[in-house]
Length: 310
Image (cartoon, rainbow, N blue to C red; front, side):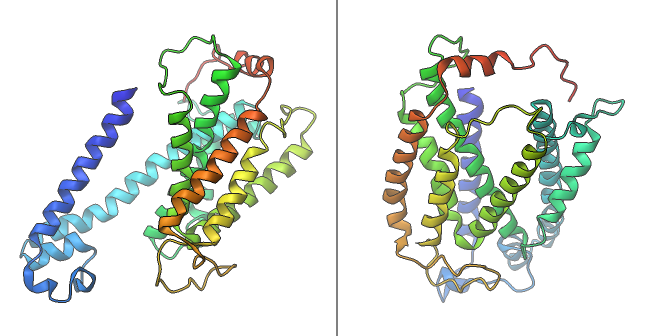
């Protein structure tokens, strides 16, 4: 696990750093007369394609433009599989309609595939371009990752004798830093993207509340107190993002419902503000965690004996 997680990040970081070095050192000096801020490429699909045309490598520009189509399609295919798996798992756990668990003869949850594809296409509507959509996905994933560090910290206290193939060192240090990092990723995305992400979260809460209210007799019990840290955290992130100013000078997005993103919390102040807020939520979440016997009961209910054909 350390190599899989840390190694993949380091390898990717090296590739991106080398890519930046190659771009910076290849830009002709006459294009930088107005500085890096004034660097533009005409009729280009991006900086690398534009630089390739300037250097006469037309074949590389064509290759990059083709990759600009293939790469998002590949990413979309991966996310389609991941979200389908999540929908299937939620249905198996009783938190979503059982229709999502229907498998075809090849063991694929085809209903989940169709639903996730339609929902994924719907999310393209509020975003004018691919970059904004990726920012939305990044913020949404950062919010989903926020629960992981708190689960680690809570279960260390609930099930201290549980067999663990791998143990994260450092006590509460690494879980807290990971939790803080999730909040920072959301803050750095900016209000123009986060507003849409928070609206999507609210819509998800409404749909889940309606579904659970209609099926409360057969669904797992909701532990409101133990999960109360999440809406508090999300609300705090929304307020800090609204008051943030991570990209000064950027014109306001006309599509915003609330005109935010130009407040007093600058990029420099975002770190200490979120550090204090994240620490407070971290302590509160551990204080309201489930009792040990409830956590042990949930762990014992994991359907490990059921065939997993996905």
